[in-house]
Length: 313
Image 1: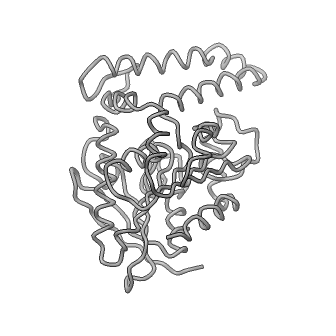
Image 2: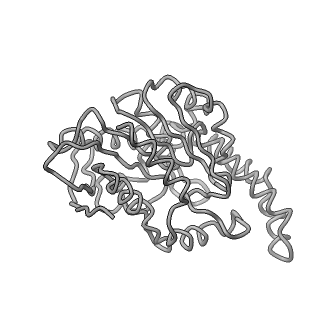
Image 3: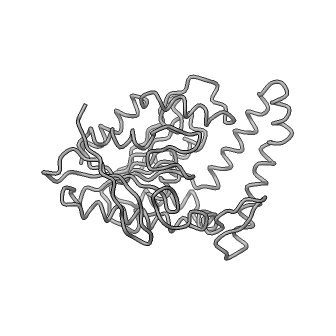
């Protein structure tokens, strides 16, 4: 295992972002990767209340072992980053990621022509969007390539409906009454409709303050838009979504599979955090599954695919 060091820094942009730089050797210029995390308020390591996974910290270690400088950061309005999370839009999170990329390029031990972006979940959507605004050397999209937020949510509601039909006992009966695919879809559509009908940054939806700006900006980007952005990017792309991913449908990779410069990989029985599942993969118990499986190594085939792809840099 390669020894590496970590330094906490503050990156200035529209807001100050708390970040960590992981590196092995400051005596030479190395390729770099910027990690962009998914939705929610987990910290830059991938941890939060009831969700200790170290998912992004372990990803950073894997990249550092391959000789890359790695930057990961807390989202706007969370942990050690400034700004307001609840009023932030997709464009704000994209601009923040660009600030981190520009910071990476300015480091004297980073090859500014070899800065790669690795986006996980919503981070993959952000990585795709910023590819049209900021020069980068390559993209790694984990668990989200080719699928926008609304389609991903409808995929999840379909799984809820299917699994509620299979669930036995009282739990199954409650799920079938309260969480059919139609009811979950209708709730999601109601949220999108409310957010798209206002120009306010935030709204209250069923008693919870939500960023209407974030929903509106996601609604403005179709899955087809994301596919076309990746196809037109012109640099290497690695898109990975496992067949057991409950957040994103691996079939969304199909329009990308024959595109020049894009490598697609759908490992069997691999979930959203790139671990091989060992249970019934219920969407109602997925958080407990993540915490349990996060303690295990990344699926070996997925790790090998990423490391082999990185050799071109």
